[in-house]
Image 1 (cartoon, chains in turn yellow, green):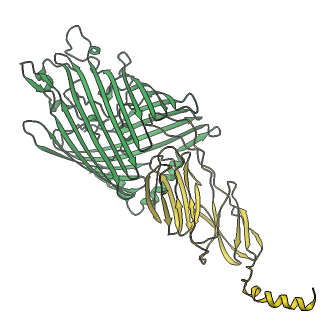
Image 2 (cartoon, one colour; image 1 turned 90 degrees about the vertical axis):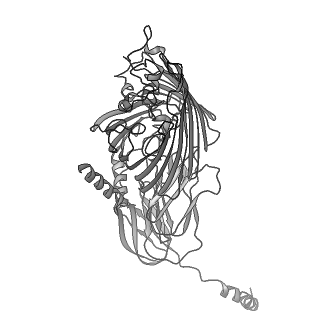
Image 3 (spheres, one colour; image 1 turned 180 degrees about the vertical axis):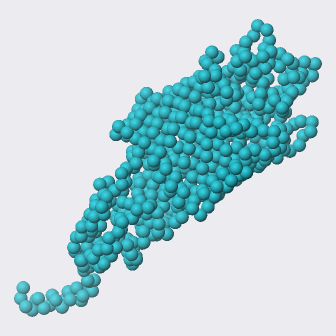
Amino acid sequence: MNRVLRVKLLRLLGPLVAALPALPAPGAEIVGRVELPKAHGAPVKTQNYEVVASSGTIPAPKPLAVVYIDGEFPPTGPAPTVQLVQKGLTFIPALLAIQVGTKVEFPNFDDLYHNVFSFSPPKRFDLGRYRTEDRPVPSQVFDKPGLITLRCEIHSHMRGQILVLNTPHFVVTDESGRFRLAGLPAGKFTVKAWIDSTTTRERTVELLPGATLTVDFP
Amino acid sequence: MRWARAVISVLTAFTGSTAGANDEWLDRLEERLSFSAWDDTLRARLSGLLSLEGYSIAQPPPGLLFTQSDRLFNPRLAVFLNAQVGPRLFGFVQARVDRGFDPSNDRLRVRLDEYAVTYIPWANTPFNVQVGQFATVIGNWVARHDSWENPFINAPLPYEHQTSIYDTEAPLSGREFATFSPGEKYEYNPVIWGPSYATGAAIAGRRGPFELAVEVKNSGPSSRPELWSIAELGFGRPAYAARLGFRPDLRWKLGVSASDSVYFAPGAQHLPPGTGRHDFRQRLLGQDIGFAWRHLQVWAELFQVWFEVPRVGTVRTVAGYVEAKYKFTPQVFGALRWNRQGFSSIDDGAGNRIRWGNSLWRTDLSAGYRFTSRTVMKLQVSGQREATQRERLRMNYAAQFNLRF
C-alpha cells in the first residue's frame, strides 16, 4: 500500500476508530475450593395418608456453597429472570444465588401439587397450588438481600434456598466445593463463601487485571 | 397453673421475636432426626407434632369431647417414624401422648395409634399393598385429619357426632333406642369414628384418572378406638370398605366409598336370643369431592349409613358437610364448614313414628395464623342447633396451637 493510499484510509477510518469505546481491561478471576459440610441423611418419601403410594427415592441433598465478592457494584443491566423448578419432589437447583431485583419463576414439573412458600424475613410469600400448565408461571421478585428458605406445604421434606446478594459477582460451587468466579473488576475486595445460614467464611484479596487468583476456604 | 405456665412458655418460645431462629433450630433438629445407611438404601425419619388445645363448651360436650367441665385443656404430642428400604418398601408408625384418643379429662397416656408397612410390587405401576393399623380408605377427610393439616380443631360432623347407636348393648325397644343419655356419652357411636385406625390390610392402585382402594379391617367405621387394635379384636368378623376415586385433573378429586361391617362390640348385651353380633350390620355409602387451586381448597362429603338394630329394624342416617379454606396471606387463613345430619323414623314400640336421632346442623368457623413455617394457631367458633323440644343454638369455642418438628 503506498503512502498516499494509507493516509487516505486513515482519514476515512479515523473518526470511526475514535468513536469506538475503549476495550475493557481483561477481567480477573478467582478459582478455589470450599470445604463443604457433610451431607445429611437422605429424605424418606413420606406418603402416610396417600391412598395410592408411589415407588421411588428422593435424592439426598448435596451441600453446596456460594462464593461472592462483597460490596456495592453499579448495575450491569436489566434484572434477569431465572427459574427454580419443582421436580421429583425436590427443588432444582436446591441452592440458587441471585442479585437483588432478580425475578424467579417457580414452575411445577411434577404431576402432583406442590405449595411453595417462604417465611424468611427478606421475602414472605405463598404461591398456593398450581399445575404444570397453569400460566403465568408463579414468580416472585426478590428485592432485599438475604437468605430465603423455600418449603413445600404438602411435602415437608422439600427444602430450597435462595441467597439474594447485592453483588453481581457470585457463583455456586459444584458438589466437590470447587468454583471459578470470572469477569471480576480489579481492586481490593472481600471474597465470601456462604456455606449455610450460620457459616460464612471470608478472605481479603487484591485482584489484578487478567490475573487468576486461587482462594481456598478450608 | 402448671399447665398454664407450660403453655405460655411454649407459645412465647415459638411465636416471639426469636421465632425465626427457632425455625432454623427445628430445621437442624429435623436433619438430626433423619438417618440413612447402606448407601441411602435404608432411610428413616422421626418427626412430631405438638398440639395444645383448649375448649370452652356448652354441656353436654359436642362431638367426641368427653368432659363434665365447661372448659378443657388437651395437650397432645404425636411422634411419627417414617422408614423406607429401597424404592418400594415403606414403614410408618404414629405414637401419641395425650388425654385419650379423643379429648377428655383423663390423665396423660402413651398410646400406639398407627403402624403400617406398604409394599409396591412393581416400580412403575401405581399399586400397593398395606398391612397394619392405619386410617380408613373411606372418604377424603383422612388426608387432612391431623391437627396440622386440618384447618379446624374438630372433625366434620359425620366423623364425630354420636348417634343413638350403642355398640355394647342392644336396645329393648324403639323408644329406648331413640333416647340419648348424655351421661353415657362415651357408649354411643358416630357413623365413622374419627380416622378409624382399625387393623387390617388394604390394596390400592391407580389407572389413568381412576384409583381404587379396598381394605379388610378387624372393625368397622363406627367402631371405637379400643377395638382398633389387633390385641383387642381379631378378624373373626372382618369389616370391608372400598373407595373408587376419579381425578380428571390435579384440581379435582371425586370418590365414592362403601363399607359393610359388624358394629356391635364383642360381648354386646341384650342381643335377641339366637342371634349374634354378626347378624347386625352397618352399611355405608359415601360420596366425596375435593377441589384445590391456588389458595382455595374445598371439600364435601355425604354419607348414607344404615344400621340393623335389634328389635327396631334397619335405621338410616344421612350426614354430610361442605368445607372451604382460603389463605388470605402467607400467614393468615380462614375456613368455614357447614355440617348437617338427619335421621330416619322408627316405630317406638307403641305404634308411634319417631326419629331415632335429633336432626342437627352445625357451622364451624375457623381462623388460623402461622407464626413461622412450623407453628400455627387456630381459633374456632361453632354453632350447633338440634331439632329438640328445647331447640336452641349452642355455641362452642376452641383454640389450638401446633408446633411441627
